[in-house]
Image: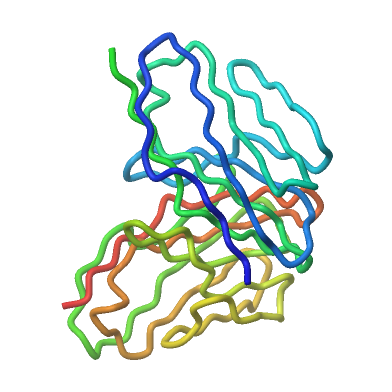
Length: 109
Length: 112
C-alpha cells in the first residue's frame, strides 16, 4: 500500500532551525511536494523535488533521497508566521498526489 | 485575480439534503480535483478530472458525484448528505505539466 509518515507535531523557537522529516512508500514515484497550510486556510506550494539532493529556496530547503524513500523540509531563521502545518506529498506512478496528515509546527518566541 | 473560487465557504446542512459545492478556475488548467480534509488525516481525493469531459474516482468517492462540462467548472454534488460528510472540502487545479496544485479557499460543510 501507499503510506506517508511524518511527525504529528513539532515545536521550535523563533530564529532557530527546524527539520521536518517525511518517509514514504508509493506505487511508483514522480517527485515529492511540500505544502504549507496555515490553520483555516488552503495549502500553498513550497517545494518540489524529483531528483536526489537539496533544493534551496530562501529560508526553506527541501531534500530528497529516492532510494531511502525519504525527504525533509528545512526551515531556517524561523519566524512566528511559520507556525503552520507542513504537508509532504509524493506523486505516484499515476501522477496522483499521496498526502500525509501533515506536521503541525509551533513556533515559540 | 486569477485563481480558484469555491462556494459556499461554509454551509450547515440537514442530513438527507442534496448539496452542490461549486468550483471555478480561470487559469485554464486541464486537471481539477476535489479533496476532503478531516482532523488528523491527510487530504483525501474524492474525484478528479484530467480534462473537460472526463472524470475519475479518487480514494473516497462514495456519496459524491462530479461533472466537468467545461475547463473552468468542476462542481461536487452530495446527493443525500450524511453526517460523516461533515468536513472541509478543497477544490484544486493543476496544469498537469508541473504537478503543482493550486487550491481554492475551501468549503466547510456541516451535516446535522
